[in-house]
Figure 1 (cartoon, rainbow, N blue to C red):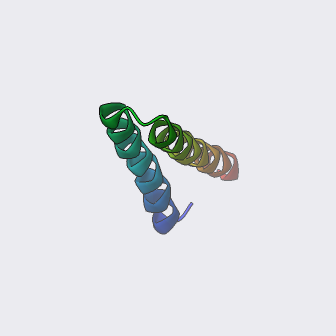
Figure 2 (cartoon, helix red, strand yellow; figure 1 turned 90 degrees about the horizontal axis):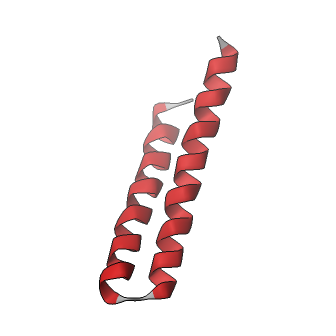
Length: 57
């Protein structure tokens, strides 16, 4: 797992968290859904990378 990929996944999860909060504030279901999707996607990518790294050892 490269450093670039780690940063990319963490950024995606963070962006999703921010978008979801903005959606809640503005009561926009679309923004909430997009934010949740980005957050979960980034988190799953991080977990997948950690599992791959664990099995390489």
